[in-house]
Image 1 (cartoon, rainbow, N blue to C red):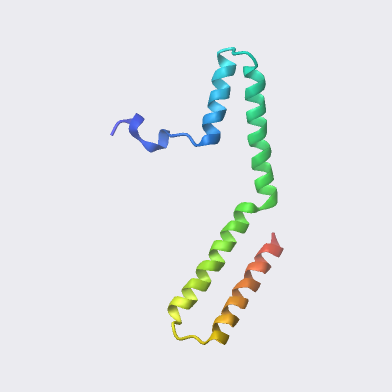
Image 2 (cartoon, helix red, strand yellow; image 1 turned 45 degrees about the horizontal axis):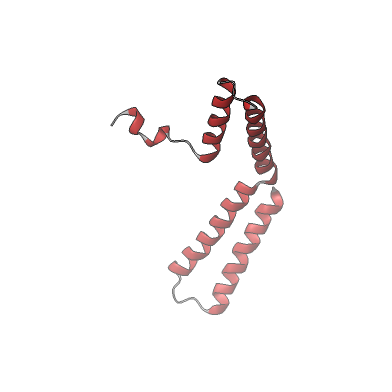
Length: 102
């Protein structure tokens, strides 16, 4: 497989937009430099917001909580409604504690 056919060369949408802006700037297109600065600034601010808001961590904790509940249900198919409720409450409390710790 040639390097150009490898998916590792593919750009995500933000990277593609930034590359287009950079090409516009390098080719001295009208407003190319301003476009590149705007796109780069937007990407930096977005990344800072994501890190400050802990959105990625919260999403990971949500998935972890749902998976823990699903695993409990799968491994305890005969659990009573009360047992299920207690386990779900336990997992939600653990999720809330993780969020509070952020």
